[in-house]
Amino acid sequence: MKKRLGDILLARGVVDSLQLQSALAYQRKWGVALGQVVVDQRFCTAEAVLSALAVQSGVEAVDLDAQPLDASLARLIPYKVAEAHRVVPLRLEGQGPRRDTVLVVALAAPASLATLDVVKSVSGKSRVVPLLATDAALGRAIGRLYRGEPATPQRRPGMEGFSLPEWEESLPLVVGTSLAELTDMAAPEPVREPVRKSDSAALPMLAPLEPTWTPMPAAPEPRVTVREQVLVYGWGADAAAGLVQVLGGAGFTVKVASTGDVCAAGETQVVVAPLPAMEVLAQRLRAQVLVAGKAPERDLPRAQAVHARGFVAAPVDPDLLLRAVRRLSRASEEARLKHAS
Image (cartoon, rainbow, N blue to C red; front, side, top):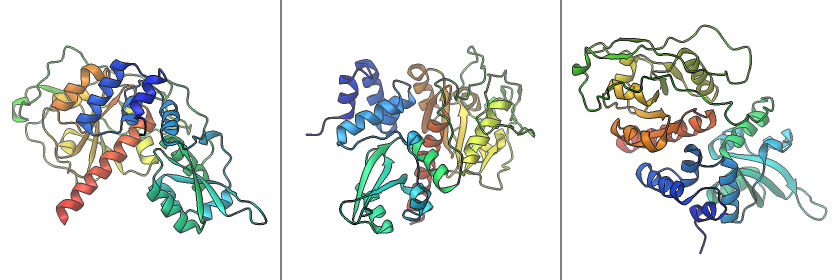
């Protein structure tokens, strides 16, 4: 019988029993893969989970950032296939006179037989050998191989996160109150998109900012005419700019949103907001809500109370953010297609 991922992580000392029980409870509630949960909650690194998945599946892991990529192999797997199935060609192997009969690829863990079948079909190779890589490393490799992006040095832990605004911890929570009852309550001012651009391709260093408060209109007029995929709401100016840069760079249409925008957002849109901003809003949105909080043990019940569909711990790692937004986007699209049929 295949050993469970949680048991492998526990046996390796990557997580302790309390962290594992917490992660399993989160998984049951939110339907997120256990490996993603322990990384999102910062119990361990994505590399540690990848190593455990390699042990579980018997498929070798690869440090994709350290792998040289052969541009000539891009013809074997079209860009759309690589992006959709999270797979990157690494090299050709074989024995005898023909040394190009086996295609070695890196793909997301756990290895998918369906992905291997697709790769065989589009590449014309009779045998495909998989190696496991993290989703973040695959994203960077796809950028290098297909879009000509430069190799980016791996970020040092703690240097890449988006910080939450410095919210007043004594702010009263009004979860469940109607919007009309919030007329006299302070709410975060919608952040305007900055006009300045960063001179660096690296993510900006984002310091916490004090939020500015203005009265919330009692009945905001719907103002979302273009259906942006992602609405960034309730962040400080620098953090909002960084989020727009990361999300836009990943191909999402993104907007720094006002209160009216998020209240009018549809179910196919994703709202990315600090947890306190959603608590002050105190209105259940039709959109898919992804909230960021400081302490998962304390903030997960609060996230559930505001009907969030996803949670990330601050400082928010860009790679984890993109993974969560992609998951919610896929879920919303599947729901839309189901209703349409």
